[in-house]
Length: 330
Ligand SMILES: Cc1cc2nc3c(=O)[nH]c(=O)nc-3n(C[C@H](O)[C@H](O)[C@H](O)COP(=O)(O)OP(=O)(O)OC[C@H]3O[C@@H](n4cnc5c(N)ncnc54)[C@H](O)[C@@H]3O)c2cc1C
Figure (tube, rainbow, N blue to C red):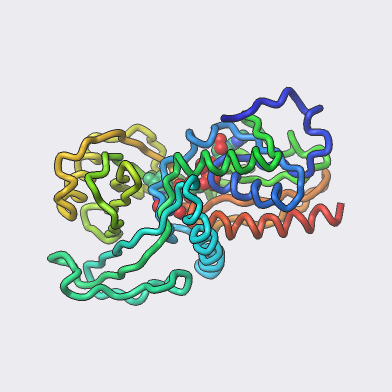
């Protein structure tokens, strides 16, 4: 999927280098390339080996801050996903589902971004639950979607190089560098505020489910069911500061038990895969320009926690604006 460039000579004329090939890097690179900039991506891991490939990936703001910027980026991304849901090869689909609460809950703070959020009736609540919200949101089938994004970028003339870099200065050379390294930014720019938020999931064959379900409050652990075309993503965990990427069998058994309690059709569903991803946690998303004394400014776009897919297009458009301004000043 990735193309190898032979060296820096091939970067002649390139305006922007994007570091990272997950959902954040690819969407930013697409917006910039489609607005006419010459853009290259360099990434240590190809798209299907990134955290993005593990995501469930439901539009839902989760463990990403600050709320006001998250709401604005999330609203814009919701609109773009509504358009992509009309493009069959994108892997994006609008699905109905519910979010359940063990205690009475206020309206969701993100409700302004989602048309038609409504409170569940008592009959809709499973035993033990006292509140819930029903809404329709984009579900993104990541392996399909990442392939769609790569094709779209490459068809527009973008190029991707697989390579780990040790510092952003290594690749600046007069260009604007956009840092979309996710959790990798911890080492790449020495950002000690970055912490992994470990997420384990079980992928099972879809026994015919259409609706998603979220139970963030479950005392036994965050629980979600996200159906896709052929499979379902069952979750999960959100373990802050935990780096272990090996799936834990006991955790997997707990996920299967909790999800099957909600949805008996999952009993005996064929288990296809166990996976772990490390969400790029940060007290606040870093989307800003950084001026340096050795050339054009850097633009950072990382630290999206559990919401990288949910915020991607909104962040990509803000990145484009920052880069255009930086290039005008060059
Ligand atoms: C189990 C799980 C469920 C999730 N569910 C959802 C969900 O339902 N909805 C949602 O919105 N989000 C969800 N997320 C969160 C989402 O996956 C992340 O927020 C998102 O993937 C972050 O994307 P990214 O592009 O910033 O990082 P990544 O996907 O990690 O990509 C980072 C890229 O940077 C590259 N890189 C890093 N360092 C270097 C370096 N030094 N040199 C070169 N390249 C480098 C990597 O190789 C990679 O290509 C979930 C995450 C997990 C783990």
